[in-house]
Length: 210
Ligand code: AP5
Image (cartoon, rainbow, N blue to C red; front, side, top):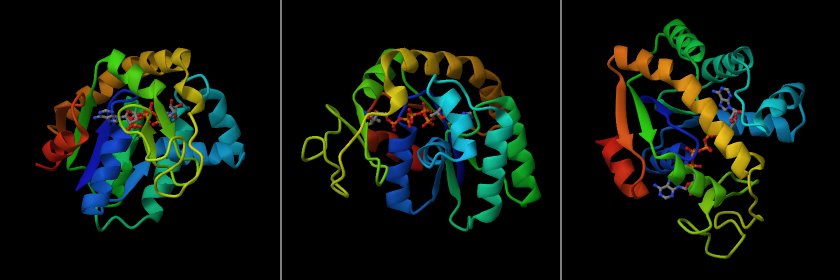
């Protein structure tokens, strides 16, 4: 399956796609992780992207489209893929269509994971991530076995820079402003599937796989 996961910050896109990756072996392309790696390595691209990310703004389309084109064209997608966090604007969605067309591929489904803003804010405020292996936890909903330590690799867990309350609210506003035309674009193509994200992860995964 070639899938796109849309949804507001904190909808659970990353959590659900990593479970599907573990169960089905479908590779996940996480735009946020690609950008955070560039930021951590202080590359030119990372420095530029950081200016937008720390405020919860979208990184400009030209940069994002350049990244996704390179990733898709250089990868092996025999097992399909899940795009998490891309596209987030109509221009990105149209560019994705063109890139896939040039590779002789097309999307199978676009999953819109939706949660109310208050749920997402609570989730993001309690989110902790592993800076080493990328595993995601929540202090209440999905705590690690040992407080503050990653179950998978033992590294010290951290809070994301953009998971501060004021930045979370702005990420929400930015998402609401940009996503409507993307949803319409995929609805018109008959690809959109809406899934309620305010439920246990296993239920969401089951419904998506069905
Ligand atoms: P990105 O990293 O993609 O952030 P986001 O879209 O805001 O999404 P999140 O990663 O915050 O949420 P998620 O839905 O994956 O939730 P998660 O599974 O972690 O992007 C960051 C920034 O990069 C953007 O702001 C922008 O600047 C830039 N960027 C990225 N892509 C871009 C693009 N295409 N164009 C332009 N700029 C771009 O879950 C959240 C928490 O909830 C976790 O703690 C988890 O444990 C918990 N949780 C998850 N599911 C459940 C559940 N069902 N029940 C209870 N708790 C749950």
